[in-house]
Amino acid sequence: MHVQSLVSVSSNAKPSHFGNRSHEFHPLAPSFVTDACRCSDTLRVWWVGYGYLMRILHTSDWHLGRTLHGVDLLADQAAYLDHLTQVVQSERVDAVLVSGDVYDRAIPPVDAVELLSSALARLAEQTRVILTPGNHDSATRLGFGAALMTGKVSVRAKIAQVGQPVEFQSDSGERALIYALPFLDPDAARSELSGPDAPLARSHEAVMGAAMERVRADLTARGGERPAALVMAHAFVVGGQPSESERDIKIGGVDSVPAGLFKDLDYAALGHLHGPQSVGAGQGVVARYSGSPLAYSFSEMHHKKSTVLLDVGPGGLVKDPELIAAPRSRRLSEVSGKLEELLGAKGQPFVDDWLRVFVTDPQRPQEMNSRLKARFPHALVMQHRPAEGATRVRESITVTPASNPVEVGTSFVAEVTGHPATKSEQDVLVQAFDRAKRAERSK
Image (cartoon, rainbow, N blue to C red; front, side):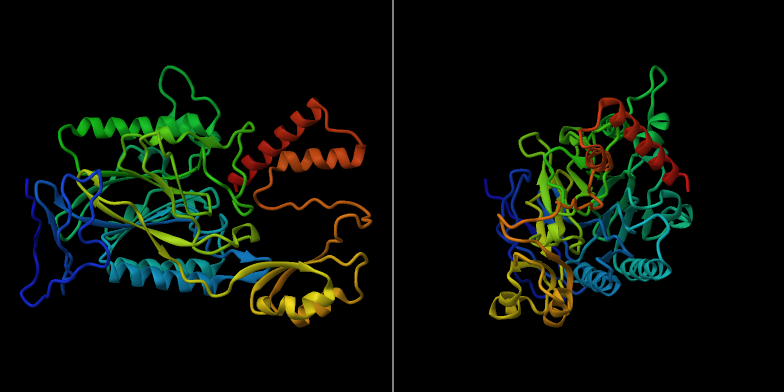
């Protein structure tokens, strides 16, 4: 059967292939695009028996206000938001989804708030923006004024709204349902999400499962054919690869949720993990982490930072997600060697990088840090780490935001007492950590 696409263009527009997207087929789509065009007013592609094509950008983990080993990253974050605005314009994007960790902390610095305000104003001139809070954000502060935002910006920060999608229709007539879930901390969410029969278990899987039950109930109640349905979630999904810069979210020793919870949705726009990656393969789930737009630790030095561009029709994604590379102002690198080697040819490729340097001389060289800083002005970490077999006084433990505080505590107990922490000591540490987390959330 011959299938032909009809392209609606303004009278003065000239048809042309739309990047690499013409003549592509996806198993989720009942037809294929035979041509596409850029128009002076809007891009309109009609799939015979299918509907209009909608374009959605998925991003997350901006962490506005964050520093990298003391270096202010606000200018780099502003450059990314400028880039995002340009992508929205050039790709004719209908909606931008920001899946949590908009800010780096609950009370962000003023310049970070001003940067977000400016970015949202510019984006709202061109598209629809939907934001949710992550575990770094204060849901109350990020959601302030959400009820007044009836235009192009929607902030979904309340647990009670998890089964109520943001419904929108693009200028071309496409419709979509976006179920925007805030970060669901089990201690804060389980009482509100519990049913009348029994309370939810104190786990991420339990509260996310309850939230998705509400999402499916809403979809079922709509009946018949529905528009595309996407979910935004900020969580650690089983199979995801973490880095050192994500804050630990373990409750009772468990921090992950199964990808199968997002079945029956056309796409899960995930946040929390900083590396761009897909999860849920083989489980009937189309889910992806956009990753952070910048590297926030040296464990991310090899990440290819990006934003996810989705082409969506009423039946779901019509092609695989496309990754649009994020700008990078300075490379993040690591180099090791003897000091004289690093001051010579071996160090030359790294002089302009944000750098972590390991000096491997058997004995710590005199004035090591000052000599390294003169050679590498953007060096952020400088450590003396003798080569294998050299004598070391003691092994240090590196603690990062991703470190499990209980594991750090048990390591400290073992260091001080000379023997591993007992079961009762571990229980005390778990209880103390949970109390500290609850106290931090109540501020």
